[in-house]
Image (cartoon, rainbow, N blue to C red; front, side, top):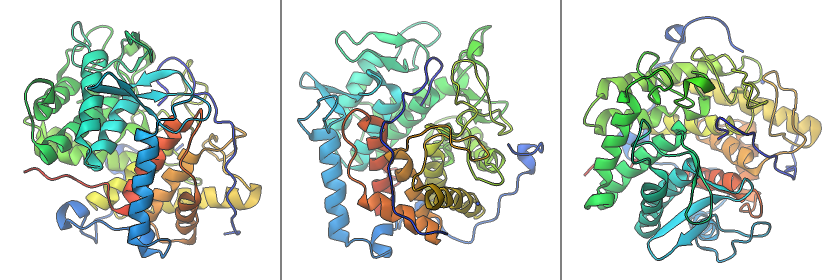
Length: 429
């Protein structure tokens, strides 16, 4: 989420959850990291998705559906868009476009636009999906130069929606492509901007095959089989653990017209990478990392080598891969280790904190509802008391509103989709 210029501004309030008392990396290569052969069948193969809230007796199916719809209505349809007290993150532009706004940072991000599209297609809301996609295609997607086909990672939130930075951030591209494939599978492709599959195919091609220059690299490293943080060499050539999406790569390998073996290999590399990047004691992941998983310090983000806001999402990425494809049973160890760390912190301090050193020392004095939401997705993988703790915390947590509702709210919505069994692979027709 932090790109190559400025650091995230902290969330002001500490989320306090009641809890009872109750978990670097070495130098080996990614190829040496063990992947435990699965003992389960994933949802992609079985077609079955769990409602973890119902399984755990937290809510009925009807209550879960009502909560999911109410949360979506607040974040995407509420008329209250005030910066400090508002609910909605979606802002209309005329009758046929809309954007997702990062209220706290005062911009429009490829991250949020692509997240909004993914949520809309999962909720079967073609109208919102098309409005977001038209806006992203019109104002955010580059039309010329080396960046052609990529998306400027942030824009000003007022017409004419000037690009604040020309460069792309790869998490946006990944989510745009996946959301477009799902839209094609759910609704079929149309013409022009609504030819979803064509745009997804072209985007994946650009991510892999942009020509390298003295200044730029394509967003996906074919030599490392890993996603890059950004394409500008001057910002450093490394990765972001939260950009690793093996579940998406499995689908790209099946649905892209090219580079199928590359995407299949990338899924396996990312699974091994998670084991490398996870701290052996705390289970924390750094925001930025070298290709071997070691934390990456940068001059432009003081927390890049810490476990901070980007790293929240790794838990959700692992939970999605474990649920959809069930390729690595050892992912449960990663989840249990991190949940144990946070549960112990909560029991000892009465709060969880958003930013830590990799060894577990808090760096921030505030917490994050988005962090709690992502920790809750661990219940898709783990059945420990720690996973139950965060599952219950998410259910008790109100939909984020106000200044920091953008990131927290979208992660909150993703977690509800996952844990209700509504975040699904939308199969090809």
